Length: 502
Ligand code: DTR
Ligand code: ZN
Ligand code: ZN
Image 1 (cartoon, helix red, strand yellow):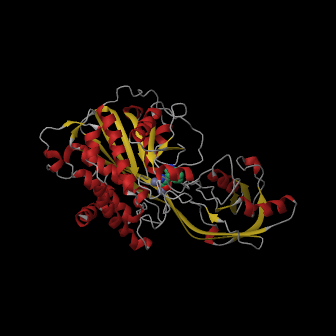
Image 2 (cartoon, protein in one colour):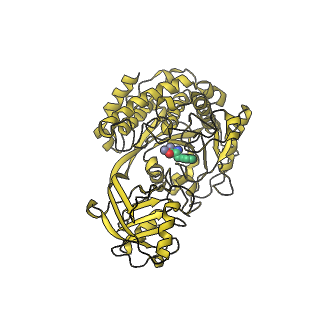
């Protein structure tokens, strides 16, 4: 099986993805379409078709696909721009195309900013702060050479131009807080600084992204508050601190692609939408993050072909989630108001099989989010409760691809099984596993491979995804009507994707 899928994947590699609309495969009937008389989709019946072994077979294919990234990255990966990601997109595309005319399938290419830090070094006084890291999407220092200058404290939290003295030939030291890291880097650059160091205003190390590049951005490091404190004291006492910063990095724009499949049947003015992300981080193969969600979508899309639907169902495999929700942001940003209003809700499925899992439901409420988000949240919690299972609420804070939807008036929500958070004792009682360990100890690492999947959680959650699709594909009666496509909340949030931005 792995070989034939891989062969299909290679067929579509390369120039095929240069086209806006790939030609559909020959829609010759496949077994799913032989069903003589299809019935209207029904949750229990669709759920009965979900089996862990089918999901795991798909995971094995995906791991072989990730191995294609080894040429360039020395280990399996499906990061955007890699062969592993191109082959992932081909696998998704060809799997849906083979289902014949049940779906209309298209792809949407968009520019994606990617960065890579090859080398970095920060010296403050005579010390190398242990917590210093170059921020994601940082530009290099001038000519990719070390720069030297006095460390200079920026006033307040460095969110307005007036906080910045003339920093020509200097290295700026700025507190975290109130505005995005990218804003601070650009303001420091505009004030003439050679490099910037942002220190944490909370406990612990700081890592984050500068986000969308500005031409004013300068080489930027982050350090912990405790590493910064002695320097802040010295500077406040009028003492000087020499600093040197060096970053060799690139920031470039590549093209990558979202894949979208919509049922040909069902009311096209009332669409139920769901998505997972097709990309991984560069560090590993991303079999749980978000291989699990992407493959769940493929399996549910495959099994759905056995049924009629009343409402249209639209599946999305987003690219560039790990670089800052690029694909879902782009998709929503180019929707016309009419198209936006056709999407009745968006369901995010990112990380469904964490090995030390908790059943997590995004705490999306109608007070803070588009109306309908809470009805969706309750569908998930009712499901767990009716199966005698525990669940926890997790913040709906912009860390995954639902963000653009709720910011544009579309009700949203989703489920997950946990990333780098630590399982509590109470959660160990509720879900088993190991208190004190991360939900996914291999989050964003090389070991996010086949052994990093909990098949019990994955199967159960895929049944829940099937339940969500079947319920709303059958009927949206009573589900709140769409009223607005305005941005729900325009304030920058702490997260926009997996990385901190503020
Ligand atoms: N799935 C993660 C992003 C993510 C979403 N929710 C949380 C909660 C805690 C940590 C991370 C996340 C990813 O794509 O990396
Ligand atoms: Zn993810
Ligand atoms: Zn991730």
